[in-house]
Length: 535
Image (cartoon, rainbow, N blue to C red; front, side, top):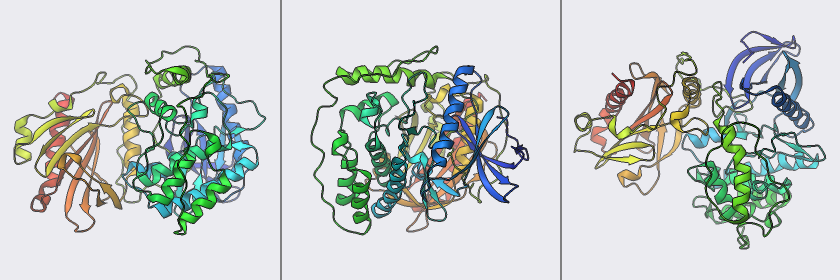
C-alpha cells in the first residue's frame, strides 16, 4: 500500500485516515484542499505475485470504473469526482458516504422489515435504470455494494466491474465476474447477461436483506453456484406474501420471466405503501438450457486449482469451466486485504475502543490444518464454569458445550473464501481489526440458539465493544441483553492466535445467572486461547 496519512495525491487530495481494504483496493478519507471538502479516495492494491500484464488489466478496469460511474447521475449511485494517476496507479476520488453497508448489517445478525426492503429496492432499481439507460450493467449487485447512509439514502457502490455495452470486457483470463450467490444463472453459464441479470442480483440482495440469509446458501462457492443453476430459491419466510412473490419473480431462472426495472419498481412501491401484490411463481423449467453456452470462461495461466463438485449435464460443464478460475484465484495469498471493507467510505463506530495495532509478518502461520475445537477445553474446565454437566458436540468447524438453558460455543472465523486455517497471520490481524471496527451498539439483533431449543428469534441489544486483555492477541468483547427485559443473555469475546481468529460466546437464558455470563465467557475463552498458544 503506497498511501500514508498526510500524503498528497495529485498535489490536491490529502489522505487523512484509512477506512478499510478489500480484495484489490483500499479506501481513504481524504481532504480536497482545492475545494475544501472531505472525499473518499480509492487506492488500488495488488498482490506482488501478479505479473505486469495482469496489473495493466486491473488498472484499466479501475479506470473504466471511474469512466462508467462518472457518467451516472442519480442520488442512489455513488458520485465519482475525479480519477488521477499517482505513482503509476489510478486513484479514484469519490463522494464520502457515512453509514454502513447492507452486508455489515446482515453480518451483525440484523434484518430489515419488508416495507423497508421494498423502499430500498425502489431506490436501487432507480439507480440501475439510470445505469442501464447509459448502456452500463453493474454486474456485482450484492449486500456489500449496497450502502445505507446516515442521511437516509440507499446508495449502490462499486461499478468497478461494470460492463459498458459495446466495449470489450477486460479480462484476459475470461474470468467469471461477480460474487457466488448473487451471480444470475445465465452468467454462471457463460452468457454476458443484460439488464435483467442485474434485476436477478438485486432480487437476491433484497431477499438477503429481509430474510437475514441469501436465497442460495451452501458450504462452498461451487455448491452455491450449483444451486443457482439447479434449484429455485426457497420461499421467503419473513418477507410476507406480497414482497415474497415479487422477489421470487426477480429470481426467476429464465430472464424472460423477470420483471424489468420499471415493473419491479412499481411492484415494490406498492408493497412499500402497504398494498397487495399477488404474482404467480415462475414457471418450472429445466435446471439448465438444452444446449451449452457458446463460450465458457477459461482457466488462467499458472496456479493450482481446487477440486470441484461433480455435477451432471451442461450445468456440470459450465461449473467446471467457470469455477476452475474461481478455485485458482482463491488460492492466491492476499496478505494485505481486510475483508468486508466497502468501496465507499464508512464511518467507524464512535463507541469503539482504540484498536491494538500489531502487524505480524506473512509466513509465520501456526495453524495449517483443521483444529478440533472440542479438545481445547477439558470437561473439568467447562464443568467448573457451567453448572449441570454440559455435553459437548461438534458445531460445524467449531464446538459447543450445552446444558439445559446454557451453552458455550467456540468457532473459527473464516477469512475471505479460504478455510480458516489457510490464512496468513497478517490477514487474520486485519480481518479482526476490521471486524471490531464494524461492530457497534445496536438494539435490533435477531438471535437464537437451536441447541437451547429456541424456535423463535429473540430481539437483543448489543453493547459497544471493549478491549479484553490477557486472551490471545487483539481480543475484544461485547455483551447482549434482552430488548424486552434488559436482562443479559449472552457475552462474546473474539481473539486471535497467530493466523486463527476465534469467536467465543456464552449464552444463558436463566435470569438468575445473568450476572455470571461475562465472567464465564472470559474464563473459558482464556483457557481455549492458552491451549491454542501451547501454554
